[in-house]
Length: 299
Image (cartoon, rainbow, N blue to C red; front, side):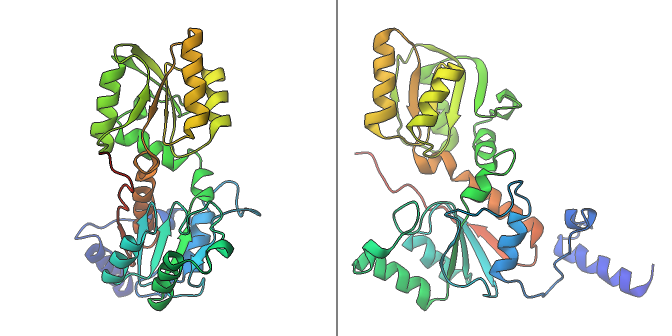
């Protein structure tokens, strides 16, 4: 072993807390990010997109909401939402790059024309600008990874990975349990105070269909028709759409139940996936997950 190689392995050992390891990037012949090398926002985003089978998307909401692609990254925060509170914590942590899963400015496309004179928008936009914080939304790309890390992370948190269908992970077959116990399980595992449901609390549940986030009525209803689950579990839905469909279906004689976890509770674990990915691919940049928390409370 020559001196340069010995020094290299010694450096790796120190970074790994005394454990010598080989980076997965080396095994895949991917350029290794060396110690103290400057890394830009663009490099991190491009590295993530390389792992998405669909590649670069022509139309996507995954754009910068503030900042610059050329900015040197000092530290990274992952979160479900880049809320004002998350931004303040990012500043306090000395980080300057936020990877958020959901919109920053209150609509799916982050269109701001209608907000230009709004004081809340102006405060948030100025807070980001004055502190040189770049925000990138990672939504479309992460959902196009195979399997979808958002679904897989939520399944893992619920201890349902082993029950998920290999081809369609959203379809889960569990040992028979009552709806009331299924609700309790989800509340405990996902840290939910209360959730909304439709169904008989004593009914048996075996076949579950889970759609984290807000995939919409078409996916909900077509999934119900195709998979015929005992329970549809979703992040959120319009009350006048999916909920009314299931209410009418039960009146018709069907037994499908509905559980609404809340959008944040159903998807926030994706931000944990992102921080783990960052620590693996860019180990020299401090990355941390900051929960955005639930915007709503129950009285």
